[in-house]
Length: 153
Image 1 (cartoon, one colour):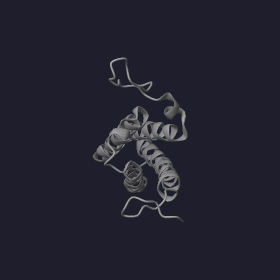
Image 2: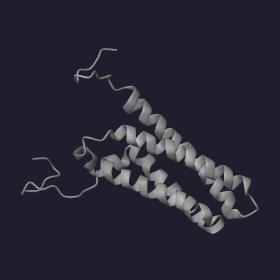
Image 3: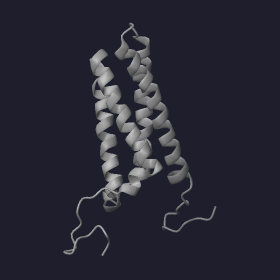
Image 4: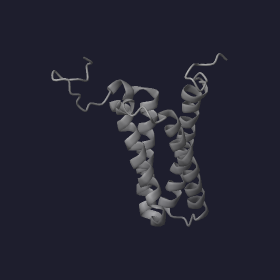
């Protein structure tokens, strides 16, 4: 029986504190905080883009919970590194566009300036996360053939 399972064999919900203190956990937490800050800045200045940081906040929170609770290991049919990579790439593109629009619509409003600034910072954080995912999970994995055997590099 693993540490996560109780005496009756059922597993409870618990977060892995080691994951939260790892590089990936800290990156996900930084993404959450920056998404929330951008949500507040956008709500104060350009509410027409309010859904963008909120949706990304919810998606990132979902990935943080899945990774820190190790529930993603139960869904083996999904390619989690690829899904996480696509989450980061789509967030980079979306926040880059929103940040450029916020910078272009700069009317001297402090919320718009802050949203653009934090949007560019968040774009960098998501880019770094995508690079780390590609470097550690996608590129360094051995190639697999159709029969499941790994090909030598």
